[in-house]
Length: 79
Image (cartoon, rainbow, N blue to C red; front, top):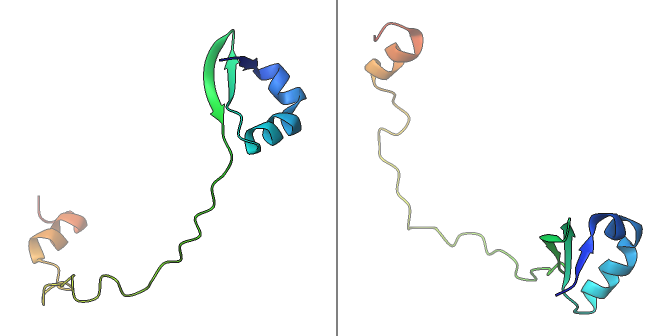
């Protein structure tokens, strides 16, 4: 595994990106120690389907009602 220095990576970034796109594993490091790996971006082609959670999640009937003790805590009265 060849480690490319950060300085070399900044100087030759376009070439390194192309090599990564072509399938080569590019390791960038500092002082000879590997720090990051340059890999090609993989675009996810799956599109989200709305409504997949329909019927699976239920809200309590009192969801919008805040108990008085909690209201008091926010206003400084419920201490």
